[in-house]
Length: 80
Image 1 (cartoon, one colour):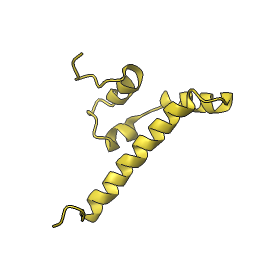
Image 2 (cartoon, one colour):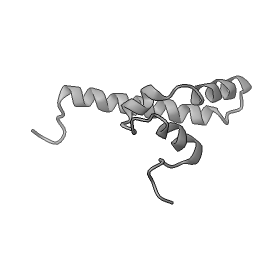
Image 3 (cartoon, helix red, strand yellow):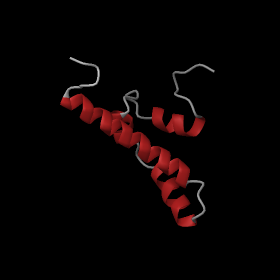
């Protein structure tokens, strides 16, 4: 199988990963945006249950890794 052809389920999963990452990045961007409404919505989203995003992004099963990553800028199992 050529490198540029992926199985359909893998391509779909990669799309879900990109979408999850894009949603989180947009929320981080909005959390410091000019509109108070956007900032508040972004903060609420970032403080909500991140379990679905952690699942899609293959983070550890405790589902706290994404919150730690967002708060500290690193995954809990990383050193330094």
